[in-house]
Length: 589
Image (cartoon, rainbow, N blue to C red; front, side, top):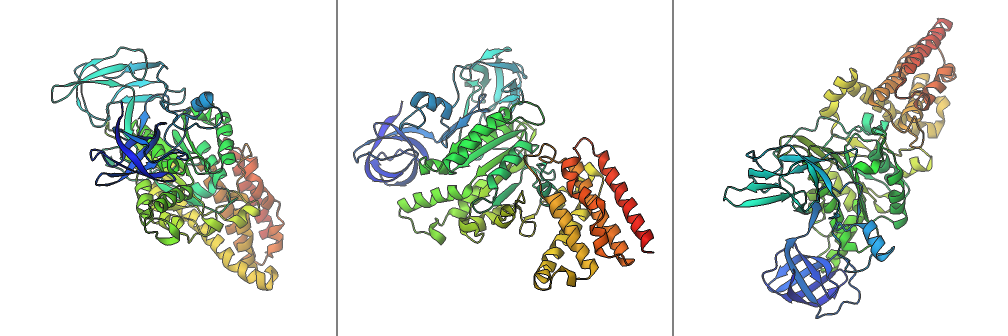
């Protein structure tokens, strides 16, 4: 039961001040007003309490009560998270809709996880076992896709004096008893709580040497993200951030997906909420929602809850990481989150920094992205959280503060280009402005998987694309006919790379996802074509005859005509290149 700890004296939007008890703690969860609106203590000055309220405060008066809980703002963790849709402070939106209709009423208090569901618990430890925080003591089939591993809370350790037999239990019923070093006995349930702003502990960080395979050729082959890494997708309105994140969420080889719609337009988030339940996981054939948690905090919801939503999402991600799973977290978009920081900072009358953002913007971004990582968990398993944050710079200006600060804390930058999107080139990732610092880290994995020098091939392709960019400036002035044939071959090969490799149709059943074997084989064919054509041009053949070879169109169409499971068809294209090039060599000897 919460007790009154103060009285409201000042209200400015989502920020209020109250006079009250000196026993209140920083970051404590409080309830404000007669409607018990959810808030969090963000400042203490003597007996003045500054509170950030996560609900609409209109109509509240000075003199309203403030109730303390003695607890930090936390999320509930346990079976039932997957397939759920929450708001920024983990209120279950489908349940709220049933209670109050399409709009969230103020002061709605619902438990995030349903208490009456019963889960089939299977113990994996026995009485007398010494266990510590993070150890797995049982399993629950949470969905057909994911096994939920019940863990000892990170801050407990001791000896099991009782463990429940294999049976159905609710998340609040005890499933074990633990004798602590102090001699006290503690009941363990499947329900845990964890403060959202506190990093969940692990044993040690591991090297990021395994790529997060997304099936998107421009990402995997040219700008790979390692599991446990952090990437940013900046782009202006209409550049394709959301579609790119949807494709990654569907196809990436992460076992659990956390999707945070942070301050996005309501209609855009509605599409996500409607589409995700209908998407089928291509690996298991089950609905994708069986391994997904959605957090929806749209632009018309209270702005302060937007700030909390990313922490809610990352805490849930760390929970599944601690079970030994690889988790991909999509934050769309961190710019809207930064705007929430700016608004609250303005209400607090803090000194603004560049473009009105608070001076601690960089620190908050670092705090968020550093929670990504590939780790050895407390139980000795390996798990990872990979963060992919969309950035929405106004007018597509990458020099604005959120984009610039984000670049300091991530190692993978996928720059979206509005001109590519307008030309219907998707994913519209600009290969000249993007970069990945994980290239050398994952090169060994690529070599082991495809037995080819992927790193060398990738660099060769990037050189061709960079050379094309330089030559295009000359072509604009004098036309391509003025270039020697060797340089015109660079333009032709770059066209094959752009149209036949980098472009990818998310709606095509064959082209939506490419295995790494298909990716590297396709790239190898284009580079082999370039090598053979270069030799023939030196022998005297004009570029026009090479451009008109039938195999050129075949190379462009192979992405949609060669399924992932029929890569032998690429050998036929290799033979066609040899046959047609050999014929040209004979003609120009």
